[in-house]
Image (cartoon, rainbow, N blue to C red; front, side):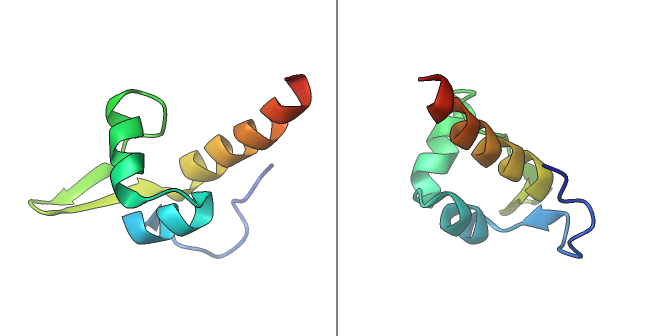
Length: 69
């Protein structure tokens, strides 16, 4: 699904990624470290964000994967 024209910021805060996936922020961090979720972008010493398109593609993959299971 192409979400490029929805006028949303390209990056999303961990809180927003957690809401979008219904997973906790710590679990998303763990999954990213294990390669099971998109890795965040380091914006500053103590600030990260996820690439919205990658998170949405991950969600789409989960949705599409249930049909194959």
